[in-house]
Image (cartoon, rainbow, N blue to C red; front, top):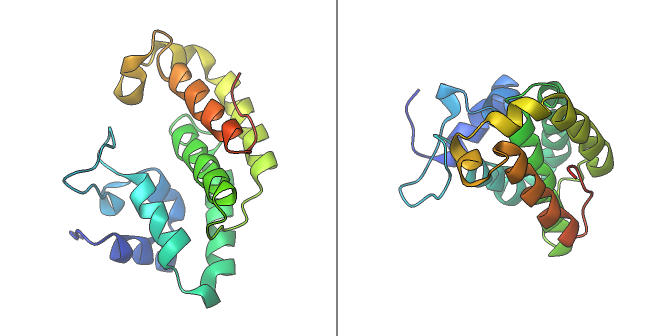
Length: 160
């Protein structure tokens, strides 16, 4: 499937029950606008915006439940740490700005994320790709930065 419309991409993932694949940037769910600052092949923030801002209110609870299920499925994997951190940050930002939220279980997700970061700590410290390229301690530095921002927004810490 080739499309440049984030609504279509997210709708396909929701319809097929593949929000985990969307979060992980599977090829069929990749989306990145020309002006996107995202370091990878997918701008997850833009795709999540569809779930937060443009999703049909009558299906919002089902979509939230599907997203929570997907987040719990991927938080145990190395590849899933970044998307889960992004979701915790975005939900915290929405809460701080009184914007529409999905009602994610932030404290529980943050605890699971913290455990995953600790489990993969040495790998994260060595990973200087993407967002890890700017930090002396690799991707771990990026997770520390995201956690600090989340806390500033009133959300839970997930990385020390």
